[in-house]
Length: 455
Ligand SMILES: Nc1ncnc2c1ncn2[C@@H]1O[C@H](COP(=O)(O)OP(=O)(O)OP(=O)(O)O)[C@@H](O)[C@H]1O
Ligand SMILES: [Mg+2]
Image 1: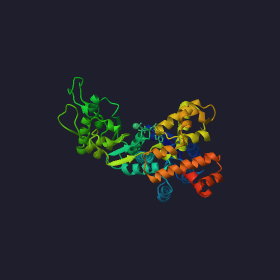
Image 2 (image 1 turned 180 degrees about the vertical axis):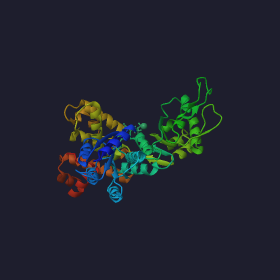
Image 3 (image 1 turned 90 degrees about the vertical axis):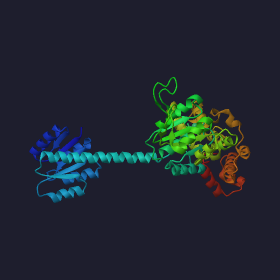
Image 4 (image 1 turned 60 degrees about the horizontal axis):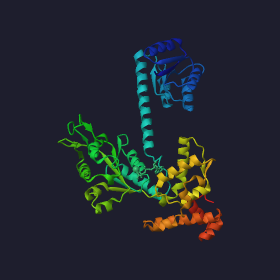
């Protein structure tokens, strides 16, 4: 029920509007001057104000000015005496929605209110859409600050708008599913379905009917038609996780979907058109699988239109302090713990550890540490034992398979700076001497690599 505040010094107008509007289903209150009206408006929400202009004790113009000044959310309609159109227009310039000149018929008032209602509804709808859009263009749940991840975000923004297939690769736990979702959310398909399928988790015998659906009578249990996941995703995005696990027979069918945009249900004789954006992910080396004959080459090229490689966590250790912070607060909420931060010693261990299980492993370590820590800090002892056993990352780095000079030397710098800071217990002048770089350069790099907390 919409609430209308009537403001007029004439008793009979208040009475008449009160009757007419409440009969139409509005909740009405009538007051006889602007001051009273303002009190009501401050005390509670009113959808609309229907106000006379000339009144003792604050007229309509002054009331309107107060409403705008205080940012009160309400639609103002002014009632002007015959021959007073100029002042009414002036009120509209100052933010009133419309005016009615007196004397007016019942129908005129109702029509004006309905128009105002309609406009208000559109305005709200607009605000809602705008907010939704803004939310959509964010990566709020993906925590990263490192250059390689910023590059990933840039790519996501670029590719999101296209229908082309994206192939996300990366070690286990690097955030492939999170990025796949971000692609969907940042695309114009965001409001359409998102369907995630783990190709490795569905038994091979069921996979075809799960993906493509079946018609009644296709097999003994098929007592009625069933839509497959591709049809459920129509208009939206389907996420084919662990695509390397897709059996060869189904690889052929997927290829057909990619080429023709059509699926065929099990037991059906005709094809059905689907409009689905495909995002696939794998932690396997698909190219090697192609060479070994375990994955179809033609399908690989069809999938790999827009490749997106997620770097392992050890190649972006700058993200670790942020992720630690993020997971501490996320799991505090979940577990009811009150840990504030990781101790410098614990953070050092986490920065040095190569995290073969990537972000997922880090997240699990934090969750465990929250439970095990007594005080407000995650201590080194509460972290998995293997963290304190591992050497710092240098050895790992040199035996890794990354050939990028740029990335490897950055990583080496980070490790050496961490070591120097450790050795000098955070004395930056001493550390810069050990590292044989200027103090200024060291401060810059400390900031760049997010090593501020190490001492
Ligand atoms: N940058 C990040 N910020 C916040 N959380 C992250 C980030 N990356 C990964 N995670 C979290 O780590 C976990 C693993 O991520 P995700 O499931 O997307 O990895 P994955 O690459 O799909 O792993 P797998 O190959 O094992 O399926 C999830 O809980 C995810 O929310
Ligand atoms: Mg995954």
